[in-house]
Length: 481
Image: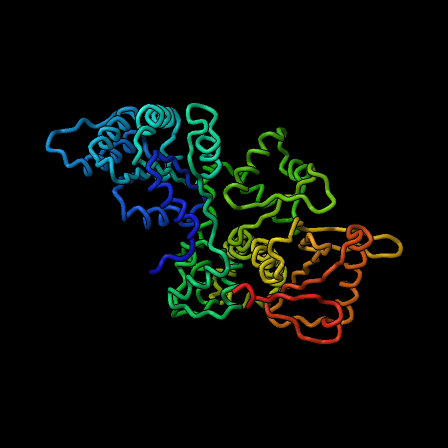
């Protein structure tokens, strides 16, 4: 299958590998996002050695597997002593490096490094010593370390304060595929979903390649989601629990944070979250929130008009949102487990409207670059703001906007995000609300700026007098794909 996306990341890796100096690269990104696949796709064309850490494996088992990978490469006729520590293991690796052609690139790929760094393993100390004393002198060497525990790699490697301080020469945070890349992915799999169904698939599982790989062309979108998410043998049926345990161990506090944050459509303030979790130390909460954000589960932002201390936290990972709205209730209900058409009937349920609106809004905010490109205002957007809220008064109702685009040409786009399975029809009531929104914005924010109203939809807008009068621009799913 053709490799989809990752052009910038692959180009960076190629540049580093051929730089003719020692390179130390860290790659982060949430589980299943395709970090290992990307690296393997590239390094198979070079001389390389790879080692993969195993979660919860004892030190000696990790060392034994490392030893086996080195010995297999060395092909030595003489017996080689098996290491009993990472100092000895990396000495063995150093000896292997010295046997290689110094005029050709050599890549050392250590995957899931955080799983090697168990308590008292000594792997970081050994890595520190051998990088500084030996490997950094090898002009043909590229060391790539990788792992799903993004916060660990950020703290211990990328922003290390000890011996590895400022040793990283490059870092990549791998994001999920975007909507356009997801369409290409399905095309390569010969799955011919409509644009609307591609959107719904993305709203359900996001752009995680391993999740998208589970879709089969012989089934409809609804059948695919039903098989993958609501079948005991489906990959995503128990994925949520596995995901959190693999990243954060047995600490349920992370799941508690997600559960509490999910109760607030527009996000929850940090102080409110602190109270609801009954955590005494704000420092601990900061760590938990940073871990979740770096792993791609939540996003923090300051709504327009709020001060910097009033950060809102919102769950933005598509699969996590989908899990809480659909899979979790399904697993807790014995009646639903007996209903093979649970997801096929989901669109008729009130929860579908709430979930789809939330998921579509999150998707649009993540694709703000595509929105800006479609509006032909690239290079003149000076500020992007989310979730503007204006309080009402005796003469004017309160108002809220999902996305604001402040431009250098004196214009601000108020982006109204609306999800519907059918084209949006702007009636008198909606038109009144939109006019109120514009007036509230002019009163409290716009100043001398010109206000343009942009509506973003899943299936377009039916033209009528209201839409022609109110809208400066509109974007629908076809523009994303």
